[in-house]
Every structure is written in structure tokens, then in C-alpha cells.
Length: 471
Ligand code: IFM
Image (cartoon, rainbow, N blue to C red; front, top):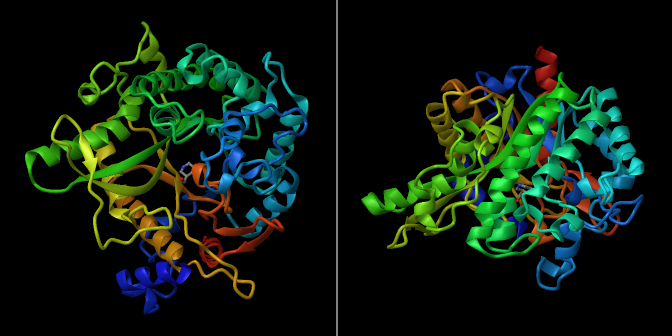
């Protein structure tokens, strides 16, 4: 399988297989990536790497519950052990630092740091204090996400994101963490990918908590955004020196034909994936044509909510992975029309770097108050194997080089992009796909927990060393 992916890639990217440019990753001399203040880092998330789900007072999360249900996660995998990062964090920080990565984006497990009554769980908080202090000692810029999908189960038992009260509990959690961790966090992101929490968790049931109802998805989305808006001023008060933002996943939708119906379908795809989040944050309103797609699914919005949600941001985190080709479904919406003969990853996702560039430039044109952007996730899964102590993740090297070139093009077109985080630092629990899909630039052998630096990470390290030497 690993060879198949490389074969596809070699066919489609002959420049790299012929050994040009000088190495298959290093950006050209005129790339903005050479600017030493362009932050290059890697990202992870608590449930995907920590394990230790029953230790030191951690409470169950919705992902513990969901992954225990047969059939919900490939091969019955769970995050119970994951990369055992809770116990191996010191070695993992050493590894991150040895790669020369300048930034690290991690998330806090809400069920690890608060009990069901909202009181602090000291042991859990101390874990993050130790981790963040060590990262700061190493000179690493820290981006901390408060919510990367591991909702405490006791809150789900009271309705989860369908219950408006969860947004207020989230603000309490943000209050606690920003009081405890102030000074060790360079940038706070309230939520990771609220679209996924709402649509995959409450809309189609592919993610925890596994509910499937269009009306639930829109209401969950509104409460997630409200949670974000309530937390931002709390973070500003408690930790004024840090940046505050949110992380959105964005999707490129292109039309299958020039027909007006297909063009409209592509527009609606992007409204549903992008404007649905960015309009409330940056314009203070939901896009008007959104509910044409699902009549009757408008969320309940109370007076003042949109003002709360559109509180000014210091940065916007953007996660980008692939493009979706769509056609009209013959009614109001769109349907996927997968393209044949295009390069895909282990996830089956199309590799389409231009989509990242085009979306970023489009956002700058649409949102006049667009804050500075960090690409908080970009990367790909491949079924990497260790051979003689090495992992030649050829397709990933090309993927990263081409997406970073797209970022450079967007910067040159005037978009204020300040950094880029590889997804992910290491192979980890890929939600409903368990451990089969490997997104890391470091390979993890789950039977021994041995980490092996992949070729992609070596090349990123080499570039960072060259950039440092030039500075
Ligand atoms: O692994 C996930 C991550 O948790 C959120 N963004 C997308 C990644 C790849 O699916």
C-alpha cells in the first residue's frame, strides 16, 4: 500500500521524483517561508495522543463512551492508551525540540482538569503546567486549544452542545484554565473545528456523541460558537498578553460543470462549510442562504448572541485538507461527485493545494476585518511503515511542499498568514478511523510506543536549520 501511494505521487509530481528542486521539501529562495518570523510548528490534540483516560481523576469524555460502542471506530480502537503521551510527554517535548520545530499546538482535555461540579482537578492541571513550562523552557511558541472534541460525558448527559448551558460551562472552564496557565500560553484557541463537532457529532453521528439530526447540528453549532464568544473576554481578562482565536476547518468546493445549477451547488457547499462559521465570527450573522439547504433547521438565537459570537479575534486558525467536487442534487443542495484520476491520500481525500490558496485569498476579499491567520492544521495520512529504521513518506513530503507553496502564494497576494502547523507531530488516534490512518511526521509503533522520525520531519528540520543559519 505504501508503495502504491508513492507510485501515484511519482506519476503526478515528476519534478520531485527527478530530484528537483535541490531537495524535495525546501521552499524556493523567494518563498515567504524563509522569513524567520513565519512560525513553523506541529499540532496534536489531547484525546488523540494522551491515553491515561482513567488516571489522576480524569473523568470520562464523550469519546471514551463513543469508542466503546462496537462499530463506531475502525477495529474497535479507543483513545485509552493512544500515544501514551501523558506518561511520555518529556521525551515527546525533547523530540519536538530536537526537530527544531518552533511552535506546538496542543489541546487540553476538559475532563482531566475539572470535576463534575466544576471544581479544579489539581493533578490534571499540573500535567499541563509541567508540559507548558517545559515547552517555554525550550523556547517553543505554545498554541493551546481548549476544546478539541473531548467533552466531559457528564455534560453530554445533560444535553451536551444541544444544551445552551454547556456554553456557560465552557466559559467557566476557560476561566479556570486561563487563570492557571496564564504566562505559559502564547495563543489560546477556544474551539477546534466547531463544524466537525456539530455536523459529525450531532448531524450525521460519525463522531461522538453519535447523534444524527440536521436540526441538532445547527443548534449545536450555535451553542459552540456562543461558547467561543463567551470565553474570549474571559481569556482577555485573565491572560491579556496572549492572542485569542478559534480554529475552523475549511473546505474547497468546486463545481462539476459550468451549469448554473452546479455553480450554485459549489457556492452552497462553501457556504455550508466555511461561511457558516466565518460569517457569524466576522460579520455577526449567519449566511442567509444557509437555511435554504435545510428549511426549518434555523437554530434558536437569543438577543445579543451574535454580538457575543463576533467578539474581535487576534487570530484565525485555519485547518485545510482537501477539495470536494460537487454537482447540484436536483433540489436545493449539492452532492459529491468524486473526480477520477486525481491524487488522493490514505483517507481518500484529494490532494488539492490550490484550494487552500484560493480560499485564503477569497476570505481576504470577503471579510474586511479578517484577523491574522495561522494554518493550524495541514497534512495527510499515509500507511507509513518503518523499514530498516526509516520511514520514507514520499507523498507527504510532496504534499507539504505544495501546500506551503500555496500558503506562500496567498501571502504574496496580500493575506496576512503568520505560521503553519503540521498535522500532526506524531501518528495518533484518528477518531472514527482509529490507529490505521497515520498523519504524523513521526511514526508511532503502538505495540512498543517507539517513535521513529519520518523523512518528512527530517526535511522540515533541515529547512529550519538552514533558515536559522541565514538569519
Ligand atoms: O485528526 C484530525 C484533527 O483532530 C482535526 N482536524 C482534522 C484531523 C485529520 O482528520
